Image (cartoon, rainbow, N blue to C red):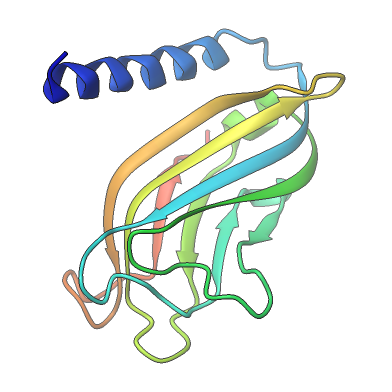
Length: 155
């Protein structure tokens, strides 16, 4: 099987998982959230800034591990958080992702972010949404003006 075919099938699989989550009723209780973040494999892509995921009233989740360099070039990390909201609540919130522009060379090139949810009474995480090729979140790299990106508009 060619690499192009594998890539296409993987994208379809992710799309199908997202679509399956969309079919769940909004009343389902989300007990926890997992966020997977991938840093691009480019020179100076990593950051030492403090990274966060803001889900409105559901919570502002900090994605830093004390004493570790979390967001290095070419690496992916997954973070977990307790949640107590309905799937409908999560769908209605604006979701922002970014950093505080602190540290030496805080600019950061993000290749992907994925959010998974686990429903109350279940041990299985379901893909909620995935975003690819976010690009530079930096005031010292093009587009030179952002450290936060909106992943989902609130309704």
